[in-house]
Amino acid sequence: MPTLVADLDTPAVVIDLDIVEANIKRAQDTLSGHGLANRPHIKTHKIPALAKLQIEAGAVGITCQKLGEVEVMADAGAADDILLTYNVLGEAKGERLAALIRRLKRMAVVLDNEVVAHGLSEAGKRHGVDIRFLIECDTGFGRNGVQTPEAALDLARVALKLPRLAFEGLMTFPNRDPGTREFFTRALELFKRAGIPVPVVSGGGTPSLFRAQEIPMLTEHRAGTYIFNDAMVVASGTATWDNCAMRVRATVVSRPTPTRAVIDAGTKVLTSDQYTVKGYGHVLEYPEAAVTNLSEEHGIVDLSPCRERPAVGDVVHVVPNHCCVVSNMVDELYGVRDGRVEAVWSVAARGMVR
Image 1 (cartoon, rainbow, N blue to C red):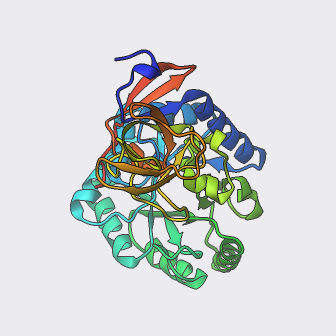
Image 2: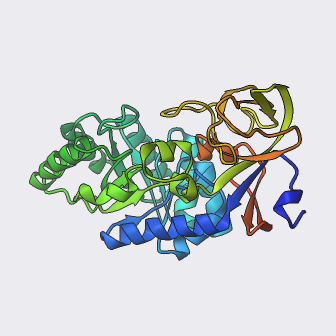
């Protein structure tokens, strides 16, 4: 394996270690300073060594999106306190969940409907384990989650009557103020009247990480992208290009016209996610350039606004739109510092979508 970044064949996904370390510290210091527990989401990097860095910095545990990710992290000893933020359905998954609960010091799941609650209860009975759960609330994002505070209480009451289930709190993604604050204010009033303690109120999302304290009832925050940052986070105003640790190292393989370059990174590396941004990445060496189109192995770069332009064979570094997907596209990430490769990480939870 090359020891110099310049010797890495392209396309390669490199991670600036100085920036990663600074990002981890910045997030941890911010949340700790506001008395909030930090539970980073590992779906961004999928690498046990990086999860361990986050735990060592002060995180109380980690968040995973799929059971396969939990299994990888548990096997590696990355954390012993894990929250799974995805509905678990089916006997096969129930069996895997029960095995993980036995292995870990603490594990919790989320649910947003009675079907999942009954399935978890049955799994708990079959395998003789108690299953901690949070109720997922839709506070404005329009994805999973109960739709009203009243529905959260109704679901909690149903689940509390089922054997082997232990209610731990409420969660949402992402924090959206004032929607999240209003939802949780009403929900906590209802739960208090019903005499049901709510020890955990969990918020999420990197764009809201540095404003999490504005929703005073939160007890913890789950963010993932902050460890690397990407074009979407920069667009949100939460980070600058200097805070972006992930760069796709790519070679200019063609200059068909004076204003067009083609790089050897397409959808199979950079991804086609756009969300809140235009184009498909930010070229650090040519900030005026635009990655305007991608096919599988080609990235099309518009150089027309650039005074200086790369030649065939030149290497550029692209900050992707969505770093979480890029991690899942490649087998390895390269940790680099001062022009040298210090670490080569296997993306251990790559493809763990079940």
